[in-house]
Length: 206
Image 1 (cartoon, one colour):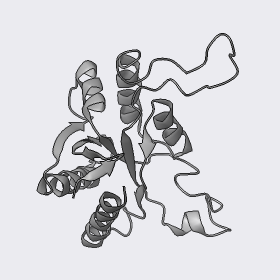
Image 2 (cartoon, helix red, strand yellow; image 1 turned 30 degrees about the vertical axis):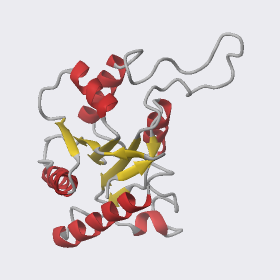
Image 3 (tube, helix red, strand yellow; image 1 turned 120 degrees about the vertical axis):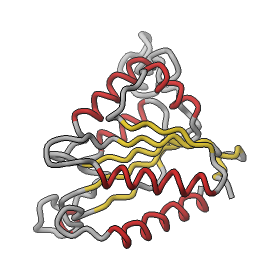
């Protein structure tokens, strides 16, 4: 069954691989993850567009992909508790290209009341997005009281700003999926099983 948003069939998925090839990281897991995503939705009859930020891209064409899509799926590793520089550059360039051109019109404020309605000028309302991240950190670093992230989840902690960025342009989230301990304790088969189960869940619940 296709995703349904307000009785409109969601059939168009834009997948972004935000994992650069840099230093010791070849970005292979996020490339594999992107392939899982595209295969899953293609097998269900969805239309797919794909961007790998390692390849050359035309900002104007990338804006068109955001405007075209019913849902954007971001795949990114986390480097030093943020998205990688090359992925951030992609967002900076493409979203700036989309200013008054499909992604956002303004910050939403008006001169009559300049302290209100900040962040309401997005143009991508009615569309969804899903975030996946990959971490060296184990899940316990987020869940245990005396561990590094002090019980702040990925979405409410390190990725809070990323989620507000998407809200700024009018996108609404579906449940994120995060892969933990991928360097020291990878389990690709189990990761694929759990991730595809997550996709099944979100496609049935939206």
